[in-house]
Length: 154
Picture (cartoon, rainbow, N blue to C red):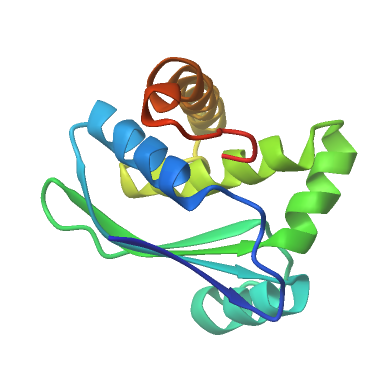
């Protein structure tokens, strides 16, 4: 089950059903099923607090992933700062929704075993993010219209 919650911010305008289908499809491409995944959307101050308390880091970030995986199943908590997502979208000239989806799937990719801190790992992660974002576009174009749903803001 995938849940979406907020702490101190308004729920972002994502289509939960479509986003959940996309997350499941991405995990499946890496050979995983989705177990319990909890998204928590927060502001910069809350993510700084989480970063300090659990990781000992004293800086803002866009996403923190807590991995509770079992063999073949991705499970975890993913904390996303909507403030940093907005700042990064502006900084990199991206649409807010696109940046939000990139960060949503970034956490799932971590749960699928993709890292981004070591030599060459950042490029691997970015490639995986781009492939996942393309999957979202394909899912919206090819599959979800048959379900009579609208993918804007998926």
